Amino acid sequence: MASFAVIGVLLVGCGSDVRSVSGVGKSAEKAKEAPAVASGPGPGPAPGGLTPVFAHATRSAEKIVALTFDADMTADQGPRATDGERFDNPALIAALRQLNVPSTVFMTGRWAEEYPDQAKAIGNDPLFEIANHSYSHYAFTSSCYGLPVVGQEAMRADVDRAFAAFRKAGARNVVPYFRFPGGCYNDAALRAIAPAKVTAVQWDVVSGDAFATDADAVAEQVLAGVRPGSVVVLHCTRSAAPVTEQAIRTIVPELRGRGYRFVKVSDLMRDRPRPPRPRP
Image 1 (tube, rainbow, N blue to C red):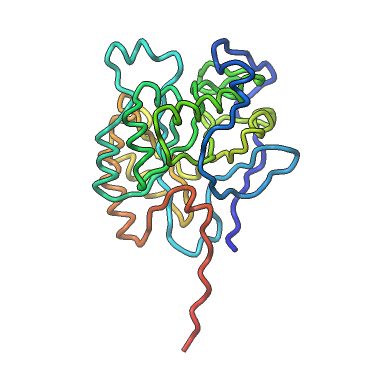
Image 2 (image 1 turned 180 degrees about the vertical axis):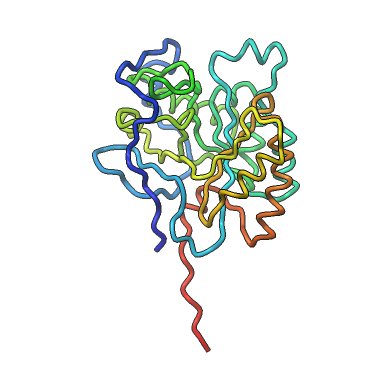
């Protein structure tokens, strides 16, 4: 049976002064609603009542890699969308379909609300699965890349509100995985969202596509970092990651040429080593 890397709890740019953000989540009753998500494999329970954390499959029997795309939209960016800023990237999704690349899209609930037709299309395409990237894209620790902060008491509600947004959009292929905005988390955040019964998914390969303008540099960084069982973090946000589609068109054929197969995160987690072939 494959073993999976369960990362220890880290304090990533965090302090003790976690601020509460008003307007995140709904009433306590709505926070308790069980979102309709598909079951999915995980790395197993974490000690101390914490949410388990997964970053890559270890000792994978195959050259497999999961490309993940963060569909970011922060709760307060509605006016920017109204003014014409695009937080979606239909050309990237079309390229993944054209190249037949199974992928996991970590979507914020606010993104799903802004682009419900796209959320539904992605969530009903068997090539993809949607995972939770929070509703607000506010930080779950203090001091996380300047993001506004979700108070600890509102974290579970923020996760649940995102699942509710996916459900409202009509997305079906929704898995119980969660990616912290900015990748920032600590012990308190892992404990706060544990009742949501999600697995926190990090990564071991940073693409560098956020705000990049050189697609070749993004591709080179990914290609240099990928190992069997890797999770690559990229973005599905046109205004903040404008060269991702172009980079993907280099990354995919090159990795396939190296013998890699693309899988979703759920497939990466359930990977099993193949038994050795008998020698003649």
